[in-house]
Length: 275
Image (spheres, rainbow, N blue to C red):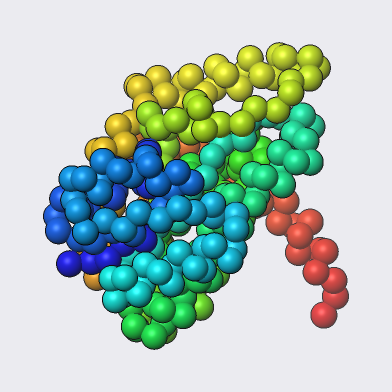
């Protein structure tokens, strides 16, 4: 039996994984901005669920929620930083407030919860942190540049974190989904005020997005078995895609990067200077 702490548990991946954990007999501290959205979980699973009201951008509240969950269940085994949203808009279009809000939630929200749980996991000598990233955390796409920036930042500190905490028995996995039928691009999304200059680019972005989901978006509930397999693994991956599209996108992206780096390597070597 594992104890989970899941942010953004009211819908999408957070909800699907909370239900899967509870159905197999695990315990879940489920956070949401509105705990009323968790009432059905409480009614169905009783004391196995601890609903917690949390805005992940509030660092003190995050530390308090983590402490409450650990006190209530006696330990934490799986910590899922799932809370986040998509910010749409070309880089030039995104306002300062929109950019800061995106980073506050997607980067700092995950950072605060990670910092809050680490003393507990280190003391236990065990634990697994799942950082919900995206295909947009390893590649980048028109019209979501600030979202990409937030997920690339999450990827960067999480890869470093994995190396820092491995000796304490703590594991880190970056979950990198492709397109799924969550409300990431729906009600939860934010959209910058468009500039007419980018209308043609926006059409290209929309066509590209449609191509990436040409086989239809994935079903969030279908991801649960994969996530359970990851958290039950003795050697979980640092990175794991979800969906049948991301690997092809990233393979092409990285082949292009490597080819370009190789093509410019003579320039790079000359830039090293004399020995």
